[in-house]
Image (cartoon, rainbow, N blue to C red):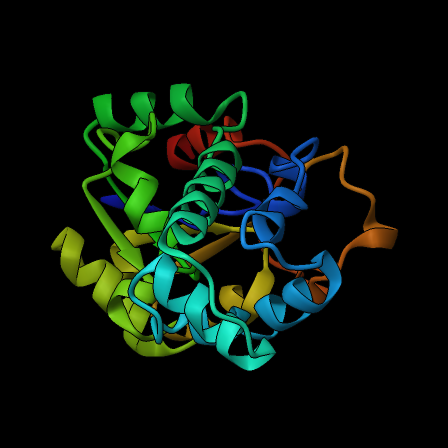
Amino acid sequence: MSYRAIIFDLFGTIVDDFAAASAGSNYGEFPAALGLPYDPFMQHWRQLTDRRALGEFQTVEASIEHVCNIIGVTVTAEQMTRAVEIRLRLTRRALTPRPDAVATLETLRNAGFKIGLLSNCSIEIPIVWPETKFAELFDSTVFSSRERVKKPSAKIYRLACERLGVAPNDCLYIADGENHELNAAAACGLSPVLIRPIAEDPRSEMRQEAREWQGPTITALTEVLELIEK
């Protein structure tokens, strides 16, 4: 089957998952900028993951304020500014392309394919996205926090296709299998492909769908080029 477009997941696909991509970063800087201890702040911050991905907080400040209100503290404007700067710096680092990502995307664009992004993510990602190497390589981006809907909802897959101006059955979907995204993509008519790097330790894999996936699988982004040639 021929395809007109390829839609990519973000974390675990064209960049490493957030924790791995931010390895070496001092996460303690974030709550410390607010004058708060690490454990209680980060516990509440992580509990907001789904709500942040669904766009409940449209600024970094709003999500920080929410956690501070839960803890019962008030921070200064200077502390807030510093904390936001740190959070965005961590996000920029997490958006470092995988070694083969940029070259693969450039090759696909030069071959005439439309390129889309579909990501479950908090508001920091679309804020920082224009600064990344990826910004000029994608024809369309769909961020859950901007759209207020996330995978595996069929609505967000249809939206990604609509933004590219293609039908679902004209699209490959490349992802790491988090959020049961592969089967959801297939149910919407896209052709899903699991990316599972050779270096990935299956014993530490947290993605149930990826463990059970029986469909097409690649180990590196460059293999997408082989898929479309077939």
